[in-house]
Amino acid sequence: MEKRNKNLLVRVNNDEYDRAKKMSEYYQMSMSEVVRISFCGSNTLDKNIRLEFLYQVNKIGVNLNQLTRKVNIKDKQTPFDILLLGEVQLIKNELKKLSKQYDEIIKIKKAK
Image (cartoon, rainbow, N blue to C red; front, side, top):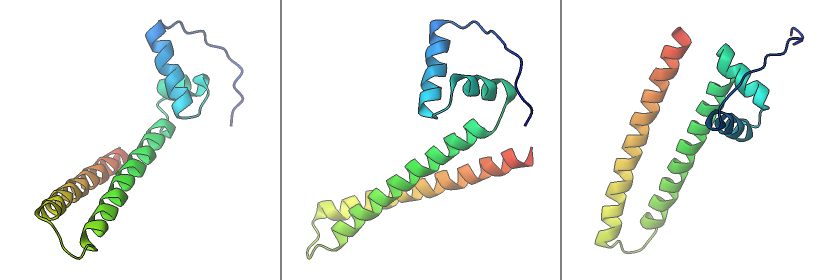
């Protein structure tokens, strides 16, 4: 990796500074890295966003599976339980669609 030996002074307003600071804290990067990634178009930030997205979708799926299991292990299901299972299935279907759309976006990005 080439040594970075040049300085670049960039002036930003308060909102831009706050946004860069929040991004650096969220992604655990220095502000220089955030600015460099934004300026140079690195995929590191995109990768972190994708990983966070997949993590959150997975958490939703796990919660839905736990909910479904609790309803299914009951001896007697109430009308509310049956309604709940139907809603859970609709949400799972939407998550599958979202995953497929995500996969398509990744394929398009890789093709570029």
